[in-house]
Image (cartoon, rainbow, N blue to C red; front, side, top):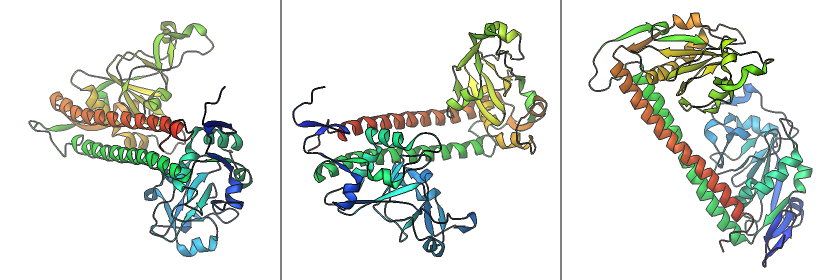
Length: 425
């Protein structure tokens, strides 16, 4: 492939001629621009008894969010205990990179209310020592680039045992545009990170509001205007025809790949909390349906997981069958299906409590038939409550779609800016 004027071919791909490719060890030894160290390596990991409500944050990979450390969900240890561990301290401005287990996650340590934070041994911190030559925000974004992530994960290996130690990290190539361009690139990508963070916080707030609304509306604590009728306790068996599922013999090809949708818990998980089920990953034939305990569940019913994972629900918009890990609710004419869906989602802990102390949780039809819930008998009120919650769901879905599009946009911007295809200066 011909390289256009002003660009050059390097080990990390085609980049502008004035950009450099520098091994990490050169940054450390020759230029003293960045210093990589792994967190708390070779020292005692904090014990559960070490954790306190306030103190030195103990940062793990799951505390990273959009390139920053989320201290709200951190654990803390006392400064005295942290001082005894001696290593793994990180300060404001450090770039964090996970190198063990889940590899390649990145963050920058922001302003701290403590002298330092402590890192799990799975995290490397890069400390920029010359901000006039290397911008730490640019370095973090470069660590997130597709080319760096591909190289890092390939060297670390796959799976839960993935690992890339300091020696190998020292040999990693880093691209270095001129410092002004580094800062410009970092500013643009950081702005997108800020937008992503704002969207995530808004979505979290909207979810909390929805949970509060469900708590108020589905218990009768708050009544919608125009409704005054009494609520009553009813068994689920009086609200819906409860049906089970089944699996045709996998040894019989004639039972599979037909026209009947066949739902498994994986199909519910794939919805990621969305309410409606339109499709399933597998199908069975009418013959498979006939020669198994599976039943065809009519559209506008509620399918609910009842084995291992208890109480995950969806409304099937088309007829489906399910495997035996479901109990399915075909609502009677006086029950609004959307209301029933929301009502069932609030009963998850109650359902789990019926499963006893077994390590393999399962709830049976007999337990569900007699399980009691509180609801308005007026279907109009049920529908009105469901409409309020459905509007909140729709708003959340729009925000989540915007979040997904913004993440995709950022990936495209990174590909352009971190390879020099698009220049800002």
